[in-house]
Length: 116
Image (tube, rainbow, N blue to C red; front, side, top):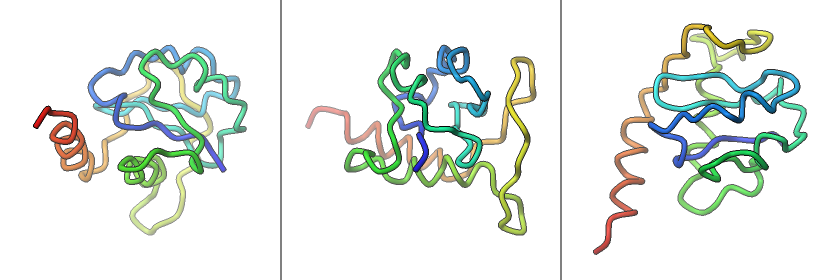
């Protein structure tokens, strides 16, 4: 089990979560942050400090947000399917490229939030 970042982070990127992570496993992407699935030690510090309540343990992801749990893994997958182990994030690093699925997922999530 690891922590994952959900749709509430898309285009917000507050970044306070990165300051509380003792192992620097939260990486900046182009439109949101991502938690590395094996570097995370599951301490929960980031979850408790997130200003938009976007972080959950992967077995506590709310209905409709499951694809974001998959994105947190996909962003670290290399072309051959193996997991990239970058060794920790530091401010100033080039942001990770968001997975292409993010555009579709964030648009879908926004539609669900609109009043009917």
